[in-house]
Length: 382
Image 1 (cartoon, rainbow, N blue to C red):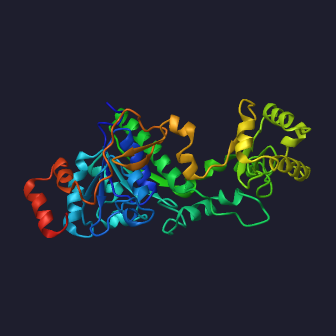
Image 2 (cartoon, rainbow, N blue to C red; image 1 turned 135 degrees about the horizontal axis):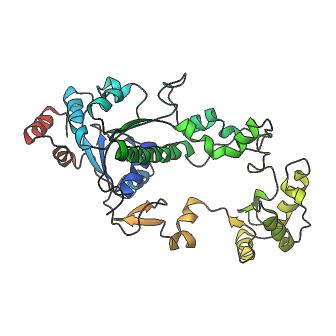
Image 3 (cartoon, rainbow, N blue to C red; image 1 turned 60 degrees about the vertical axis):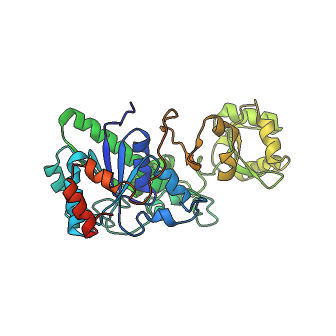
C-alpha cells in the first residue's frame, strides 16, 4: 500500500507546474486522471526535446503512472460530464487563469457546496486576487516580480536567465503540500478546501536570506550578500581546463581547512562581506586556475573542504553518486527522474497516450455506458 493509494485526482493542468504536482501525487500512489482537450492535448507532448518515439522527454518524466482522457470542455456535454465525475474524486487540480473554471460552470465555491469533501487546487502565476491576478506569465516573470531574480548577481550586469524553472516546480511543490494538508484536514472534519497557490509567491522562501536582509534594513547590493556571491568562500571558480567548481566553505572550520590545504592564509574576515572580498576572491580564483576540474575533485577527496564539480545535466545523469542513489531510471526505455519521495520499490506505468484511457476513466467515475457512448458520438469525448 502506498500512502495515497486511496486518493483520486482529476488533473486539468498541462506543461510543467501542475503536471509536476500531480506526478508527485501519482508517485505516492494516487490515481491521477489527466483530462486533455481534443487535438494536441497537453502542449508539452509535441515540443522538443523528443525521444526516439517522438514523445517529449519532459512529458514522459512528468506523466508516468497517470491516465489520460479526452474531454472537450468547450462543449456543454463535456463540461456536464466533468461535473458528473467529480463526486468520485478527492482532488480537482487546475491551472487556468482566475475565473476560467467559473466560466466553465465549475466555480470552486459552488463545487465546495455540491462536493463538500472535494479539494480544489488552483495553481496560477499571481493568485486568484490582486492587481496582477489576470496577468499572463511564465517562470522568469514570476521570479522577476517576486524579487528573487533581483537578488542574483553579479551587479555589473543584469541578472541572467536561470538554468532551471524555480517558480514552476516550486509552485507544484507548494500545491502538493497544500493538498496533503487539506486532505489531512478533511480526515478530521469531512470538509474539503479551495487552495489558492501562486507561483510568484512560492519563489520567495528560496531567497529567505536576501529578504531577511531587506526587511532588516540591511540589503546588500545585488550579488554581494553572503549567499549570493558576496564572499570568496561561497563562490564558483574557473579551473585550469576552463571548467568550474563550487566552493561553499561557509563555516569557519570548512574555510580554514580549505585554505590550509590550498596554501592560503585565511582569516575569519574572509567570511564577511565587504570591500576586502575583491582581493580575497582574486587570490582564491588564482589558486583554482592551477588545477583542472578533475584534479580539484581528486584533491578534495577526504579533506571536507566543500568543493564540488559544476556538472552539466548530461554529466549529472552519469554521476556515480546519483547512479548509486538510483535517481535516474527508465520505464520502457523512457528516461525518468526520481524525486526525493518517489518510491524505489514500485513499478510505474509509462506516460499515457493522448486519450488512451478515456472510456475507462469515464466508467470508473460512474458514468453509464449510454452516457459514455453519447459523449463519443457527439465528439465531446474521444
